[in-house]
Length: 351
Image 1 (tube, rainbow, N blue to C red):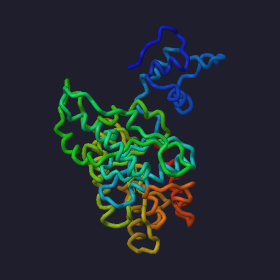
Image 2: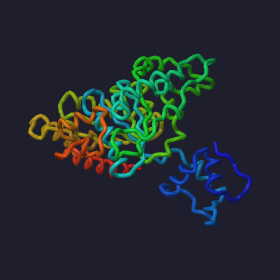
Image 3: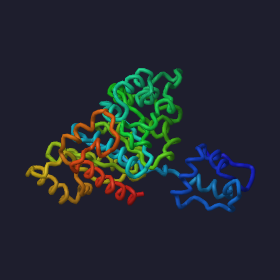
Image 4: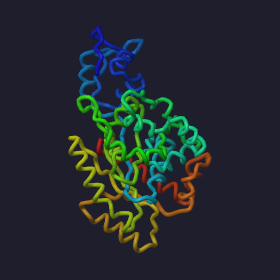
């Protein structure tokens, strides 16, 4: 809901108050959204705007300015966690983007890659993970909510010194138990409780703080995954180029499209990311060719992530000074960087 100021002109502070966001968010809107109204005048104290134009702008804004992209594959062990972590760290360290990572996978691998197991255990014991958000939804209506967004949000994560603008909403093993129970949650007064809209409602206030939001989804198409897709503009599918790893891609496409159609929105197929690629493997080469030739499948990113020990080791929480040190000097880091550059171009094309 947009609050209405009493005067005809408003400054940045008043715009932030009207929208219930921070002034940093308003500054992001001004610099990145061409629809934002121009100032009526630039005073010493800052720009001032026509209040009516600002109200109309706020009513038109439905989607966050952040590029929200989900990563998903129905098969585990395909490099989904490594790909998402590298995306976040390289977007921050190399391209100076502010990134939020939302870990919805109950395996918690991405969470421990970014903050380590000890810190994760402490957060989990205190209930400061996304599991608490979902358990709140299935608690007795008389019980108060326990999810605290500010305490759950972990700022400036990553053990790489060069990475300074990645935040994290951590996962929990408890999400495994929550998944099935969400389907039977109370519909609430006037059917206001939607089990696939819990995440969006909880974190929408912070999305505009970021350039990119990366949502790591579980290897299934259940309610937790749909919560991730609900806030996403598009999705990528990291996969090893073999039969078992790519088998479920059409199922992902069908389910995501049906979900998006039901919402009346679009969730774009950004592309397939080839991981653990072995150029000498006939199976890998033939599978990539098959994926590229199938017009029904999402586009395949040209830059492939190679199979390499250094990349495998990057899934461990370990301090590094630079991203090149973490991901490898023998072309591994450059492969990731090239992919991220291609990813940025693809994502900005769908905005």
